[in-house]
Image (tube, rainbow, N blue to C red; front, side, top):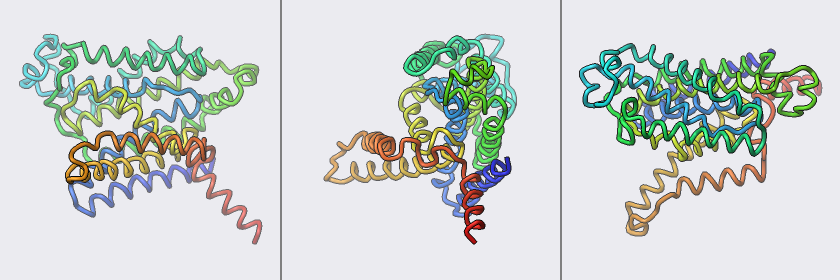
Length: 342
């Protein structure tokens, strides 16, 4: 358990270093990149709480992010703007306006409730069936967001959210989510869930209710995704349903897989690495398009390189950068080994 405390301290220190370092540099673009990185970290760590402990891939995570973003938007857009932003909104909702921070919590709760209602039958599935049904759930959530005009403004861009998310708020939420993920991993539910990941038959023989354990983890992941979506919504302030579909799903899963899905450290490391790579590749793509050589024809370079990177990592290191052990455990073992040798 001591190495879990060390892991928490190290990861929180990394988050603080990102936030403080960006503010000390004082460049607005870097602040924006750092804030976006920390929001992505919330989403990736949230996915890790389910995928890393259960061993099941979930495509629906970004759908719950979208649900959280729209929930917070409906609750916080100023009443005088709702007529323009959401012309078909139900009358009883037009006068509702609460604090963005309270709305973020409500967004997480609603995402968790929806997950609790729809996901329990899906938790009995494994392997390919689980992946297919989670993708189907993403399609359902996306279709609802794309067509529920009263709540989301349909496929059109929703605007008018107050800009509440800044670098300190994103850093605080990211740090809290990291601690929650580590606590869940060390909880009885987390340990039993990982046991079922390794051997379902043996875990069931020990009395583990595997569908219920997965259901709990899925609800927690959806809660974190809802909060992450609300954070993102109050950072970007305008968005459409297409922001919560395949492209974002691919990016979040890439961050987790490259970092290491089985560890919270891997989720953090993958988020940082892929964010820097993504921003660098986007800059390269823009520079090529601005030159005569590129002639404005370089499209999709970022996605192609990230996809190839994920393939390469899966071949060379299938478990990711941190496949099994958290950073605190690695450092503790290294120190003990050094002491033994000495």
